[in-house]
Image 1 (cartoon, rainbow, N blue to C red):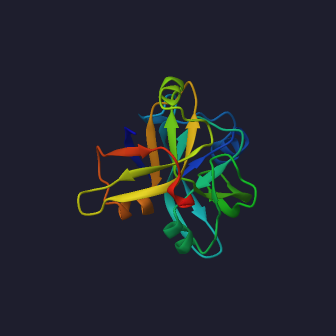
Image 2: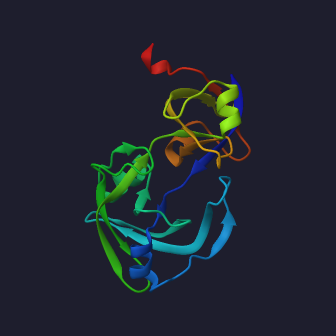
Length: 196
């Protein structure tokens, strides 16, 4: 159908204003160290400890800008290590998500929910979505990977916004399975093969 860049997202945290204030201090501002591919999004200098009853990860990167609710995105392998079982969810859907603790330089926050495995997704701008007749929330497949590890991922949710740039987002488990390194492109296939 068409080609799009493939990006692999490592574990990271999105914070709300309330939790940023608790963890770093009142009216704290995140420091942008790198702009990400989606306009307005950036990797922050700041990191946190993500802790559960089973284990912890140090130096988990915060991604800005701030959001309306705090969300921790991890892979299935990360979840095994932490001893939790978060659901696969679209970003922002935290119903039934797992709890964890965030530890910052000034305090800690016990999240009663917020840890998820992000559903693989395809960011699209409005003109590209219109050109290929794709709708927000639609499921597609993408064919990605190195010559020896070509993989087709289905149940890739289409996310459309005027602010987006076309990009396929996978987590580290998915990226490793397909042998993805840098500068990969994936082929977006109309329809979701899981129905076949």
